[in-house]
Amino acid sequence: MKFTISKQSFLDALQQVQHVVSNRTTLPILSNVLIEAADGKLKLTTTDLDVGVSGSVEANIEKEGSTTLPVKRLVSIVRELPAENVEVSVDAKNHASIKSGPSFFKIIGLGEDEFPPLPKFEDAKEYKIAQAVMKDSLKKTSYAISTDETRYVLNGIFTSFKDGKMTLVATDGRRLAMVENDLEFPSSNEADVIIPSKAVQELQRLLSDEGDVVVKLTDSQIAFEINGSLLVSKLIEGNYPNYRQVIPGNTTERVQVGREAFLETIRRVSLLASDKSNSVKLAFGPNYVDLMANSQDIGEASEKIDISYDGKEFAIAFNPEFLMAPLKNLTTEDVYLDLIDEMSPGVVRIDGSFLYVIMPMRVTN
Image (cartoon, rainbow, N blue to C red; front, side):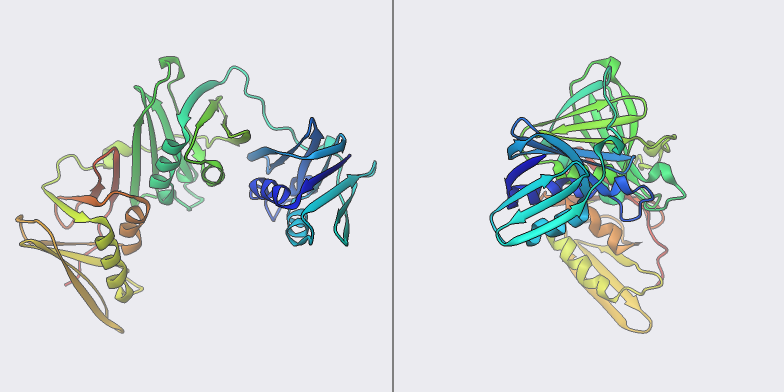
């Protein structure tokens, strides 16, 4: 196998697939990228057996063939090469010679026969979604995925294709983010799946604001076809909790507040939140909300924001990181806080199909 390719194109293509590869793998082949050279293109594939990704890049191919090379090492070499173009030739023993300007590297690969193939998606359910919609929906929800591995069903995004809608939900038990979008698909394609966190991260890297993503679904696997790249992943097995029952039905107070000003104020005030309680208190009064934090050892902070409010006076406390998370990932000018009392969950909403439920913390006076 022999090919020449521009350094930047090669680097971009390798970086697109390298994140899947784990640093701690027991099988050496899983540290490698499968490189297939044919028809004026290089096809690059990596997998950790749960998530796999492949993409292609144009190259000048002198001799077709395939091999696998250690991807992290290859990326670090290509990144440092001195010239614009890279020439790679691989011999029958899978030893790759890499030349660029005055530089020469030789790295030892493994035969492509050992590389586990990505699953096939024949007879799969298929959906076509605008990339911008998918990207926006993941941005609004993925930060709420649980990292607690003992509750593995929460280590991903619950994705429901039902009643002409695509619903995405993420929760870690203390907060919940949800987005719904209208989507056309036949009723025979209705399904509920949980996409693991690692696949969600890779998907967010691949998505752009233009064009569509084609989603293919089988009982245990999901695939995303995006701009000539393919991402495949196992699904998380198990039953996702009934998330609708944690969304408060009747909230008594609705407060409209400027998103950026609210975010900046929480960020400032939370500088003096104590490590132990890690909470910011929101005290509501006539046409204002006072944000407060204190720490016995350090001191206290407070800042008022003018709002339109004529309801009862009360205070509620939230974890500042959890309160800031949706504000950072939304783009609307205003958000609505729907509240009941100091002990009930609060809900952040926008003019659109997004909501975020956040559990309150105990208020100390």
